[in-house]
Picture: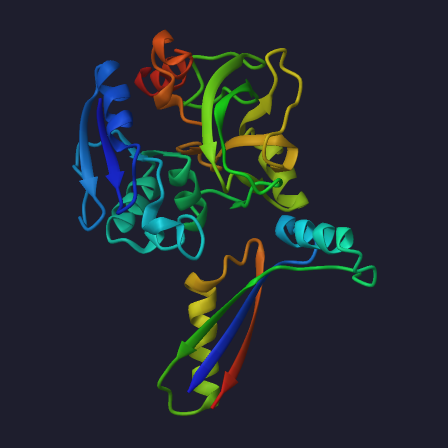
Length: 80
Length: 224
């Protein structure tokens, strides 16, 4: 089973990398970009009984290590 | 005075830290991160600067789970003193021994230079040899030194005198190199026994290095 974790800075926490990329896109004349957020994607190949238990386990991984919940949000997608 | 200095794979300030504390008369011991205990007579644990685990995932995120950190957390829980410098500060926030978190510098550059700091709180062991408002000159060297805490957390820090240092210029006016909330360079925990800062006082121990202002900071741990 594959778990895809996307980690982004929380809304309201300034994303300097996103801002820099937005600025660069602006200078390249891509005028329609309203906002840019840069995050990271962590792809896990895991063994689990079912999707629910996989999600529960990956949630625990996110809370303890994969995300710093003081500044970051995470989203988990389980792909069989 | 016995100082235990924690060393992870990627730590690179352990010997500077050892030199600094021995210069002040302490007995020191470097403790490898795989150890499960620290010397029982340890007065101060220093989590030294560097790039623990290559800063993979987030600075300090992986080091936080090294075996020795349980001993450091136990030392802190019984009121023992802990100081985290630079990457050590990041490790202590990741461990939740200190509030807040360190983000990438606002302008995304690695910064390495001397910077002035203003003493905000001196009602603690660490900065007791300095006066509120004193300006010191201490090197900084970091990529993820942008301190963040939410507005309620920030208020709690000020209410409880937990903000230690602000970045400033030589006149003491706010000068923020990395985008930290309120230009904060260092904080302590509510119990005032765990301290963290991004600047490196251990690199400012004698005039030939450009500043000896780090001495007054580290000497705070020697006063009874």
